[in-house]
Length: 517
Image (cartoon, rainbow, N blue to C red; front, side, top):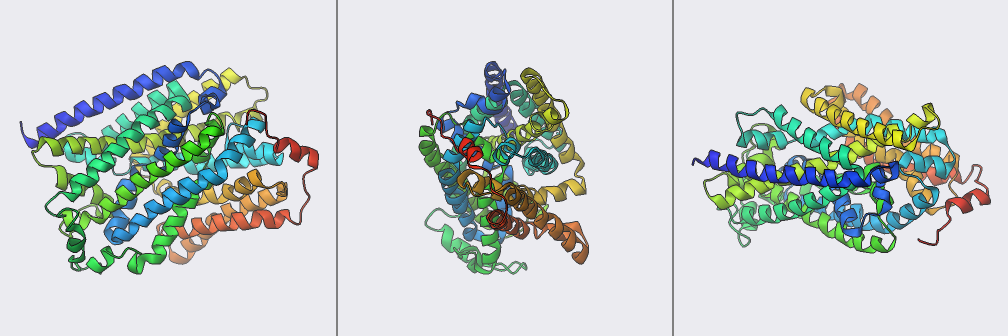
């Protein structure tokens, strides 16, 4: 059997087993999703391990491995590992400590199932719910197309006679099946399985990568990195081995803040707090999600920082987006059965990371329409009808993500660049202050939401005009996203200090702690 045929056979077996497990989970979970609460939140009965893995796998899509780890590992080096550390300590540990208990308690008290619903109940504003739902729909549905990024390159290298679009269709169909069948329950339990695959895959990837001749083992990888010469791009071993980012320190810090604090305002991440079964499970989930993030994040960026050794300091065709796929294929694409199995596991790792994030985003986006917008247009919508609408929308949104990914429409690509910053920037202030402070007013929440949104929206227009293209403005998306979050966090309490407060009776109802909490 040839090397390629062996790799294809092992990969097909692994993919078939993986797909079978995902579909079985979807069928099993369908028994628990007869109501909107069941479909969106698993009846708020998800345990700590599953909740933690659902959070972590939604956090890390294939974009971190293929996009971020490839680009930052190649250009920054070992310093990029701090992004993984920041994601674990700020995006997971601190987020769970500050947000989880209050979010779970308040959404349970208010009986809210989505972030737009939370805003409506917390601030007594249906208009805020509609605005938040529109923001989610416009900026998260196109973003879901980004999760396919890089997977095509890996599949195409192993199956050169099968088109990239075919593999993306396989991902979309498989995700659509278990998501439509089982809703959040299916998503959470498949995330758990996918999370285990990701952990095994990252450990296998790091150990196998270190042992390659090009890297030279744990005792030699650092000295080998230091000896990398300038290949014409101005980056040498001194930059790659600088633990603080070297000349890229400012860029590094910006991306740590965006990708770490950004999760605090993203509805698909916050929803994981709604569904956990009780506050006693939160402490355990906090530790689990932090350890998971540390393993996945640091492992991905560490491998990215070794890519110049494996690729002989030569950027592959396709640029930085092709760094990780080419690195993995170069390192593990020989005739050895062990490395072939590792390559198949890594392919499932990337597939798992993509599907978990895709399902989370699609579920959030579909609920923004079925739960937050439809009832405002058609009053007294029955619960069972909302479940049907949500299932149909999930299927439609998965299809849309596939269409966007295959068409590569310029405006969609640009929306992806701004999505994290504009969504989190709009929501983080009203959400974070809203769960902790009784002093936040409706005017303050609206001001924070609009200020965060407009910081990115207006900034994009200004930079597009002054720099001549949207793609040029997209390069500043991380800075605008961080600024938007800061503006939202500052404006919300500032305006609240000078505007009409809610009466004490209303606030007592909002901040009520039920006995089972």
